[in-house]
Image (cartoon, rainbow, N blue to C red; front, top):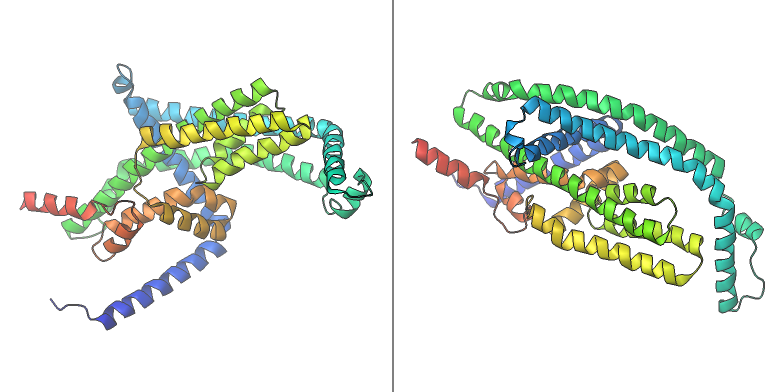
Amino acid sequence: MSTPTPNDRLQTLFFGVALAAVVGWVLHVGKSVFVPIVFRVVVAYVIVGLARLQERIPGIGPRLPVPLRYALSILGIGLVLAAGATLVAGNVGRVVAQLPAYQETLLSQIQRLAAVAGVETAPTWQTLQEEVLQQINLQSLIGSTVVSVTGLLATVLIVLLYVAFLLMEQGVFARKVDRLSNDPRDARRIHAVVRDVNSRIGTYLAMKTMINILLGVVSWAIMEVMGVQFAAFWAVLIALLNYVPYIGSFLGVLFPVALAIVQFGEPTPVLVLAIALSAAQFVIGSFLDPFLMGNSLNLSPFAILTSLAIWSSLWGIAGAFLAVPMMAVLMIVLAGFDGTRPIAVLMSSNGEVGMADDESESGEQAA
């Protein structure tokens, strides 16, 4: 077998970059088609992961039939999504009712800062609206929010329907893989990749969901004790934002603190709230998250940040939520084949991807 020359490697690299550019363009143009499909697959992985976690429950878990565990997972996710959408819709009217009070508090804070800065003419709410907020149509914003929430409730039902069909496909998927190639080694390799994706991505998403729910509950308790308005809404938002690596934790503190500024109008409670929410994010993110999940995806921080930038530019906010699982799937697939394995090694956090070694060992044992 001839050794690849530098010219061959350069040609392969060129074609690889060209293929990546074409795939990226297709993903960007077809965002409206691909994003819902990927979200449905992610929900299916969460359901499968939760079903596997139920199996670990001492005494009860192993006795539960697989269809019942799937049904309980689907029911739980459906209730959580419906409750979150209903919560958002119910808080829209309350936000509108509180707007005059928020405006007065915000105006007083701005006037106080203007006095400290030595501005001679104190700003009024009318001048602020004319100079800063004239481009904002509040009624249109609220109306679009209500329409979005209503559409979300319908989307939940459609997503669960698609997920049900995906779960039914599991039974015949193995036979389909066996018929993809006449070479048994290729079939075994594809089976190994699919098994690794199912195990690692399902476990990650299920554990991440449980951790995010815990973070939301802790954040809700902090805000409820401090008297922050719409604490339940902010708790749901914090739990959702925690799916976004790094940036999500920052935004999960920023948004409630921004509301506290206009609600309290005093620096002390705002500072205490910021410290308490940051402490909750730090403890759960730095101690509990690694303890429960370990390094399940084996992605380097640089790969995660790169994935966040790429998928956010391709799919916007949806891409930010999907960045980590998409990059993990890509790394697992690349690790399953000799030609792309070096790329997977560079994407990993410790350089150990394991796929090829495991396959070679199993091949030697079979021989």
